[in-house]
Each structure stands twice: as structure tokens, then as C-alpha cells.
Image (cartoon, rainbow, N blue to C red; front, side, top):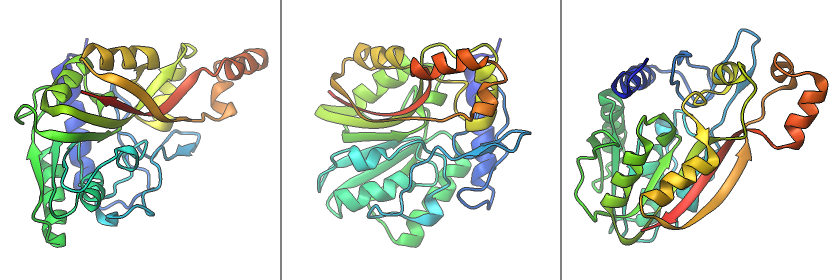
Amino acid sequence: MTTGEQLKEIVRQKYSDIAGADSPKGVAVDCGCGPTSCCGPAQTGSDYTILMADEYTDLSGYVADADLGLGCGLPTQFAQIKPGDVVVDLGSGAGNDCFVARAETGESGRVIGLDMTEKMIERARQNAEALHYTNVEFVLGDIEAMPLPNDLADVVVSNCVMNLVPDKARAFAETFRILKPGGHFSISDIVLRGDLPQGLQQDAELYAGCVAGAIQKDTYLDLVAGAGFKNITIQKEKEIKLPNELLMNYLTLDELRTYKQQQRGIFSITVYAEK
């Protein structure tokens, strides 16, 4: 059985490989199909491709070099960031959401990106230096034990990262700890609704990425509430559409109709909650 530490090492290695690659956004990266996999573009032997990431290009502060196409939503768009806010981005990668957050918080604010992958931190720092940003910093650390002080952030954002954390309850407890009283988060992530047919989850992981670590939507929201958060709201929800050709490997035509009518499947959600 794979332990939490082994899972984190798998994720760390995959994202180190991505950070060191020059592949542009939208080009498939071989993220592997083990217990966890990277979000973003992936493909199967049937040449199915999907990009779960939403389009950032219309958002202020967008930096193409920092966008590796690894997200599954636009949490910064929904995060209600105000000028002067302190913003923490969990799993900040090459800095994409941090730079968008900086456009909202302005020169008077502060943006901190936290990532457990050294190569991602290096790449993000290079991007910030090239932009001459002095109020954006990147910290190496684990979301389950953040090297950040209590009551630090006005806003926390995260994009398709909590899904990859083995101990999600602890991660949300840490998120609660670093938020100021009255602060809030906006987090995009992958969840399941209903049970997937046997075998489909593994194929869906190859197709869409980030699925193997997904948990049921209701369980996910219960973990948020269990950490002490209030006013929990779904800001956006979209289905990660799997092609009928993939579904028909596991379902008869009648079962496929029932599956779609019951709205079972894989979903990207953006969740808002307050401390």
C-alpha cells in the first residue's frame, strides 16, 4: 500500500519534471498514471486529450511563462481579493495564480506562493524576478505542515492541488490556521459525484489527470466544514466530460443513459469558505 509520504514523492517528482520541461501550455506532458497524477493535459493510447484548466488570458496580471496549464479552475477570479490584501497560493507552481493575485492586491499587498517542489519554486522566483515584483515571494513547504505563521492571510487560493494532498483534513486545518479571522479562501479542485463504474476511474486518470486522488464532493465539503470554516459556497462547478467511447468500455448503452441522467462523474469545483 502506498503511504502518504510515497504519494507526495510521486507528485513532487512529476511536478519537478514539468518544471524542468519547456513544453508549452496545452501540450501533453507524460505525468504517469500511478496513484496520483498531474492535472492538465493528458492522453491515452486512444489519443483522447483534455485540458481541465480554464483560460486565464483575459485576467489582469496573467503571465504566459508562469501558466503551465496544470489547474482546473480560476480561483483568483472568484477570490474577492482587495488592494492591500495578503494572499497565499497553495501549490503555486510557476507562479500563475500569484501574479494574477498581485494584480488585484496591488503594490500595497503581499502575495506568497507555497510549493513543495524545489524546481517549481526556482521557476516561479525566476518569473517574479523577470517581472521586477518585490511583493511576491515563493516559499518551499508542505501544505500539510505549512512553514507560515498563524493569522497571516486575508485570502488563500489554490488550483487543483488539494486533490493531490494525502491528508486533506490536515491541509484544510492548516489553511484555517494561516488565515486571519474573517479571512476566506477560494479553491478550485477535482471531486467525484456518485460512484464511478469499476475500472473507469483508472482510465479517467489517464484521460484527464488528477482523478485518482479525487474524493466525493460531499466528503470534500465535509472536510472543509470540519476544519472550522463557515459560509461554504460553490462558486463554480463544471463537469469534466469523458467521451462516450471511454465510458462504453465499462457501461452498456442503457447504463450510459442512466449514468448521464444521474449526473455521476468527475467535476471541477471552485469552493469559497470563511474563517
